[in-house]
Structure formats: C-alpha cells, structure tokens
Image (tube, rainbow over all chains, first blue to last red; front, side):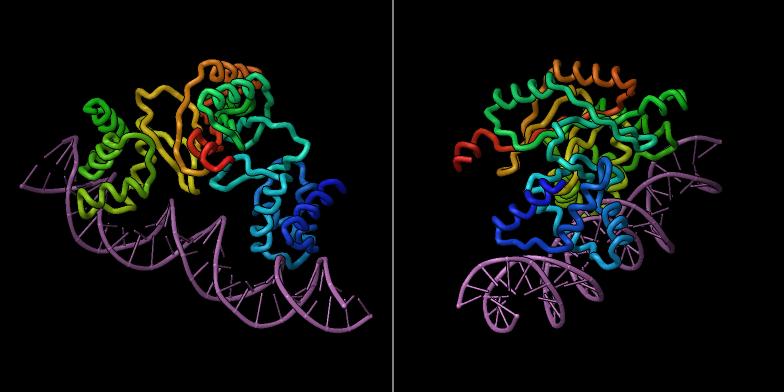
Length: 146
Length: 146
DNA sequence: TTGTAATTGAGAATCAATCGCAATAAGCTT
DNA sequence: AAGCTTATTGCGATTGATTCTCAATTACAA
C-alpha cells in the first residue's frame, strides 16, 4: 500500500510531475478495489467519496499509473478497456465468460516459456503480452446446455 | 474464393437476410486483401472502386461476416479493431511491433494444447482465444538500440 | 410481375475519450 | 513563510468512431 504510493510519488517526481491529492485518491481507490476495474467504476467510486473529481482527471492519470508500472490494461470487455493492479501480481491470462461476464485468471508458466521461445525465434523484443480466452464458464455452460 | 461467397450466401439465406451487391463487394474486397484489415482500409478500397458504398453498410456487414465464420476480429491496433480472414487460416497468435506497426503471425500447437488444458481445468468452454504480444520487431529493435 | 420485408445511403445521434482554458495549487527557491 | 514557476484541475466544448433513423430502393419468393 504505502509502498505503491511511494512508487507513484517517485515516478511523478522523476518526470517533474506533481503528486496531487487527486492522484493520490485515484491510486488509493484502485488499491482498495478487489479485482479488475474500469474507468466508469473508478469514477463511480470516487464520485461518491469525493464529490468533485473530474472524469478527465481520471483519464489523465491512467497513463501515469500504467507508465509507473502500478496498473496495466488487460483486456476489453463490453467495448471498454479493463485494468488491473500489476505490481506484485504475477502475469496471468484471462478466461472471460461471454454469458455472465465473470473473469477468471489463470497462470501457466509453460505457456509463458513458449511465448518467450516464439519471441526468440522471431528476434522480437516483447514488452507486453496478453492471452485471453472467451467462452462459457462452468456455471453458464451447465445452465443452458450451451 | 467462389467457395467463400457461396458460404456467405448460404449463411445469409439461412437467416432470411439478402445477398446484395454491396455485401458481395465487401466480401470480395476482403478476400482480395493480403493480410489484416480494418474498417477504414476497407472503406478506402471500396470507395475508390465503387463511388458510393456507405461506411454504415460496411459496419453493418462486419457482424454477418464474423457470424458466418469468414472473418474474425483478431486484435486492436491504434485503438481500432483489426480483422482477418478466418476460413482456412489455422489459428495463430500475433506479434505486433509498437514502433513500426508490423504484425507477424505465429503458430504454436503446444501453446494451443496448453490453452485447452487450462480450459479443462476450469471446466470452461472456449469459443475464441487470442494471444497477442507487443514489442519491438527485429528491424526496430536493432535500429534504435531499443 | 407483384408484394413484403430487408437493405441502402445520408445525415443525425451517441458516447467514450480528449482538448482548451482560466483558475488553482504543488513544490522549489530564497 | 512568501513568492514564483509551471503542472494540474474542473468544466464545458470537441472529436471521432460507431450506431441509429428513415425514406427510398431492391432482393427474392410466390
């Protein structure tokens, strides 16, 4: 917690950016959220807590949070980007249920290794990778015979 | 070629939709394009060939082409969806250069198998999966010492 | 050929994301 | 502690891709 805030502050400082109350509130809100989040949800949460915190400010702080390594965009859902905290979370793929919207995470070292192999083969220097599988989750596939 | 047009026609017929000249032109344009495509590129191509073919018509036909299995959305680039022909193309992942925009495709059966294993573990019925790796391609990584 | 219902093009509408600007405030310097 | 410089904020306006509306057109079955 404290750690992440310090990281953000250092990141901002190193770029001559300022550590404002708004930026702190946004980061704290993100840290307090359980799993994935999106702009709309963040705005809703912050709007209730602190009457005036502009949507524009949230949009403007997302790139800083990404560049500081604290969050990352992991996928799109309902045509909107979804983010998650990335510090201390090992990389993982996502299973997205197209019926109920539930998002499951999975971690597979073998897949990661194979991806690295592919990059070596192509002499490609990866900076980010995403593996997303859409379909029907356990509950939904049994519910409707789908 | 002929084959794909027949498939599209059958698909449309089965849903009481009509096989119009516009829809044929759109499919033909897609089939004649080499790799990936997006709406803007399609419109540009069709606009030159046939003066009046509305952007709305292209947007409206994309879902039909996807549902008929002829194309699929494979990724976003520059914040726009990118599509590719899917009939007869084995599934593959993508390496996207964030410097020059080049898109490389790779195929890896082992990764596919591991994905299936993950789905079995979670009792998840997959309908679609995407593996995208962003980074610097061979040329770009050597060019700027990046 | 006719009738019905889907489709088209054009422009309006939508909606997330970005921008411009005047007022505010972070944080260095003294 | 006060001043100064420059980044940041909120607001409202704007952008730009995508979708919608609607009247005119047209596919296609009978």
